[in-house]
Length: 399
Image (cartoon, rainbow, N blue to C red):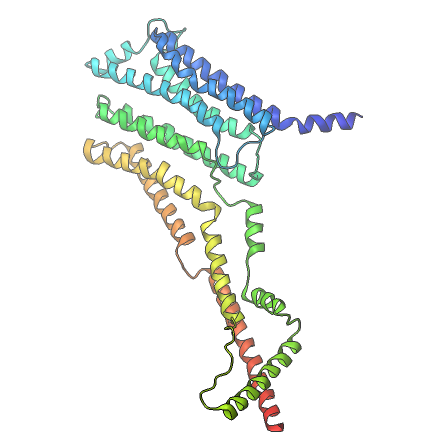
């Protein structure tokens, strides 16, 4: 009895985690909206709560229709959560930009940012942006992804995904350190560019792109790998050639029938070619074509490609362009900025290199092994054909 109760509670666990994650998102989002409206004394900012309202309806649909199971490639609860938090970050960062522009020196800037009318306790615009919104958003996404039911992704994929989230989050948060540089503190274009790249890079958390191909996926690809020997055996079985001896005998019979047909054609006339017959497909040629087609489909459906494209176009690519622009146009030469520029450049190069390996035709270990199998298959084919021709010659002499 007790075992059955515990089993039911264990089966109820995915629903509990799904509710817990969304409640955490809702609490953090509501607190951020309330602080924004209270600190800036503007009730219009309550409109940003629309995202977590939609999050509530998404939670109801997920619990009732999907039994708490998440989607495999998209994370809608994170999208609705970010649709509330990102506008708050934009509002607060633009307010800090206005204060930096309106003040003449760093001292008055710090004094003006020290407090906002109507703020709660020691929470000012800088604290609201840096700690509550920006840092809280990243930590909430990582913890939320950890607590959510895995759905259709494996534990290996989830652990790789979380490790990728941690590294990506550190790079994203460091992006705001650019605004601390004196050269670009009062540049509105730089602030808008940083916020735009920040928003674009955050959207990658909504895409569940695993950092590596999962174990189940690897097993699936390995089991679906068709070698030339397997295809030939399958073609032979389809042609009802169960054994090699049957294949030899049928081949000799076809040679005898072809010889008789040739003699009949000679008797009927030189121009008579007999009835048209359907062209028979060579199993060897078909096998090679199927092997190439299967390899191409496996390459296109490889799990790493989606993660690589996400890293190129939503992470390292935009970050590298922004950092190079700051170096060339605004002469930002700080040590950390140059370090992260090199880091993004190296990461982007490695991603492009790996993408070329997965998509371009090259002779890696699998290709070499595949060619060796084809060579062995051709050798066997030639040996069988030579033996059959010898038998056919003996039969012709005997006739």
